[in-house]
Length: 282
Image (cartoon, rainbow, N blue to C red; front, side, top):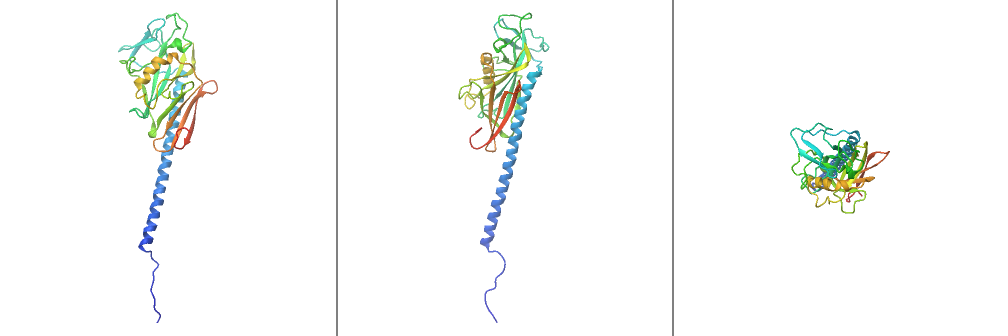
């Protein structure tokens, strides 16, 4: 009769703990990879939607497809002043405001630290129909930003404060926020630039790109009222530019994206680059 210790094919408690720990790590890694891919897909879709909306805004200006705000009137204050815009329960029909024309649209992204960081604003612009030193109805049509003197159809923080708010707000999806905006010719740190797509009565299908370079997106640019003030006070002195870029950060990944607005085949177009890394848009 032989003796000895009888063994079985089972696992020890320590071996079971090791297997469970490894399995848990693999499951967590799989979930982390899945959620990361979902966040990456959300960011990709979100920033491409923003690019599409910017391109649509440019196309609307080129086609003269402006919204009809049935709550204001505007007119020419004097031969050298910007148009005057007032609230009205009985406004003139579109195209019947003496000396006043639609002048394009402007977009503004709010500071990442503001309450409005998850949306961006689109402002419709109104401006002078006539060149400087002339009066309607018999006058040469505006041909420059200095003639047009565009203003936003929205209340500012200090300018036209009581005006009806005709701003169109668009949501940024997936926690995306604008990090900086670079208008060609803007100095470093002037990243609170609003971008304007402007057309003139003398050549209504041509769209020029302008940037207002004065506010810092990361600190002193908390609200759309400041954006409206910047448009009303500075756009008429701006110079047309050939290119501008907007950098966006992701809310849930290390991705960032840069939308560039530029002149392609004789008209404004947009392009998109997506980056990965801790430094946005690099």
